[in-house]
Image 1 (cartoon, helix red, strand yellow):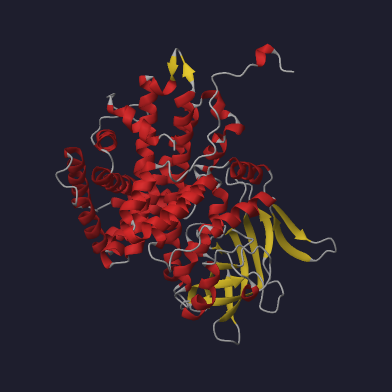
Image 2 (image 1 turned 90 degrees about the vertical axis):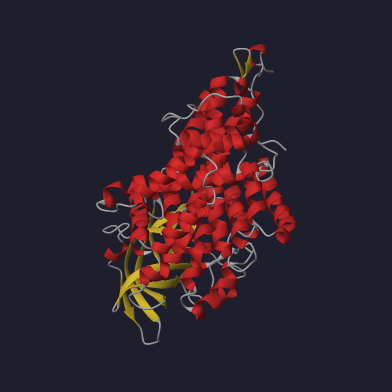
Length: 544
């Protein structure tokens, strides 16, 4: 029997049993504005079902289990046969199966597919971000495979399947398949042209044998992988199946699993190719050009993933402060805490608005939208992923010591928060890609200027920031040393433009004042204190 000193009071109930999608106003409004009205009813039903599942106590428990018992490498079976398998906690498979069933690998072939998938991805990140890696790789492999129509016809239906089939067997016998990728090597990292893996042509046209070592292999339990290797004609893209058509294992030697800061439920591996069979994807020597579509899609998923992490952190902070009392009042009613929460909420909404706008550009598919993506995706990937960690850490601080305890779930978000900034090209890679787009593809800048021009005259701070950006863009001499500054400003002006167009006035005003007008400090909680901040916080509160 508990003693009287153990009476629990002034502790908020866990944030559970809620609709992660339906209570996210920024996200639901983005879906409604970017999706064809004829698709809305179906989309709302599917996303709300996913949101309720994501907010359930059961899935939150599975997420904790998948992280507490991380994947384990089994190199050999009991008899000494090389098997190179990764064992996961059953909770991992349950979560991954739900992600596949929700259509997180299916966007390219359905109306409004990218907006619907982006919203689902943002929701699903808030359950357990580790499962988002294989889901993202599988989704993003499609544009690369389309460089080889026969391969696309064979594999695309498997990748878009809503069935998760975890068994290792020939892909033709499976109801669904997942993809990973192995691009980087220890001597090159992001400089994939420094790869030394060798591809030797075999007798059959398009077939090769690979020999080499990959420093990072994403989702090593997948059915197929996109790999870069040096063919006689130069760096080339290849498809490596995990299991060959006759049922034998393709030589795919998992040397070790990476011991990562976060993302612990997911496996990342070093892999050795030793006479590994592969199919060429695209032309020899065109490896980077072939995989660039996959890279762009995964970079957008980094934006969406960071937006999801931010949203969950803000939801947890606002929920806690709405029920926790201190010094005679709820924390959410304290002016300084309200300022912190509003500042975090504005950052979260800006990330969501930008990620969903870029997903809509994929659905549109027009020439101008493709040009916008070329510049906006690396800028967004640079900036949104960089903002994720400070947002999540500040949100954890809103819970005080409770936020530093594993049971709160915030430490897992903190550990996860730097990942999207590092993966798929770290900050310098993104900033330099922005510069490359500006120099080589003038239509990308034209499309960007058209986009932000839609709000000209609506906010003087946004206008001034756009003018300053144009001045900076007018001089690209020695731009490499200031590429990060340029990427940041491109992202901020685009975010400001989207919020002015679509967000409530109090949200847009706070963003433009603090992020573009200089009326805010370096830390969160430094917005001008006005009555409007209460509305910003209330908008971010996860309530039905």
